[in-house]
Length: 253
Length: 254
Image (cartoon, rainbow over all chains, first blue to last red; front, top):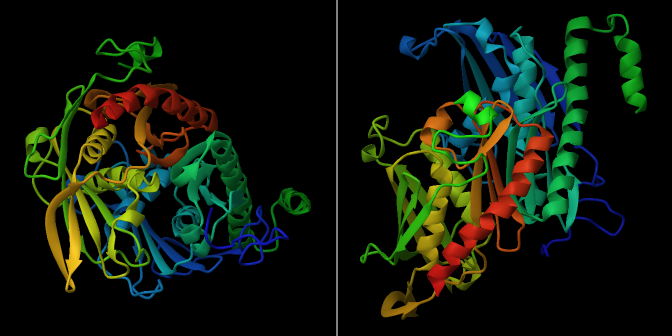
């Protein structure tokens, strides 16, 4: 179906992963000194910085809401982040991604705790690989937690897709371009709520079920990495009681 | 409204999974290469097709170009103001575009004049003239109807120049993508929401399927969530509901 061989006879993908394997994910917290919360995520070759400002006063003032906080989100790609230079002006794609990101994060934030205020989330893609919106959401939710914003859950995000007629986890740039389906998902792991779901590409009924379930499994893996990054930042090596044991157990799984 | 929906009823008397009456007229704009006016309940959309030639998209050098745009005209509702497109309108145009594009409804491989240099460019521009909810589906049906009923001009290359032969051809259609939009209010899922119902929605989802019943595009929207069970339910419902709408659209090609 696809012209390029993206999975070889040993079941390995172009970057050496198996079909259920996540790319290497690394999250560093507190990378922007001026921000109230920030995170840097390396998700495969994606390099994304997220800064959170707020809760703070709303400008322009008429945007303020009397009963809850305004959440604003800007997803932006640096001109040097892609193969050919990207025009720095916000594209229609970036406007749409900013919107779906905001909608993916909003259910997790207790906006009612900050009436008449605003929280701004700035997502800057420094280097883009496939799946930058998912990586951006994962980093943004960690940055929000770092800013001390009251949250119901972290938002984990991961894509699954179809490549050479197989459903695979976390598709990269080549698989996105040459593969036949891409489904990014954002998920609140403790509340079991799906807050972002998009699909482009063709999936039949059983592939659809397999794909969404695989993406949710991926989200759960990303969640563990987010959680670990936060624990390391705030507790260092002195983990609170019980956490150390739990982390070990998760590692074994 | 919440109480009504919890009891399985809606303000306009529909059941939760009923879609509104759909009326389609085609060939309403003679200057366009294809056109359609769709009424979905009180939501009304006009789609018009103009075909030109141009350079192919980067990375898709051997394919024709298909561009879907949408504009919610200021005549459509008291809440719309003229000006550059806002987030909602950009999302609308991109979701409709994705539904058509990802289903590969138009075989773009057949719309190339000089590979890598000159290809057919099909513009499908949509004007929303009355907005009463579920603009995603109304616009999508208008685009599909306009494409199905279109006659594309035949261009040829003579001495390196593009010449319009004055002849017409049928568009290379491979499948009919149909989108179904549902929203969640409380724990209830309702299909084809009106503007009034959209004000109360917590989350929205648009699912597009092709003629083989395969999923080709999905977009979740609005600030709430869905559970996995709810998503599986709307995905199933979308597959079932598309059939009557697809039949209606198929009649246009006869």
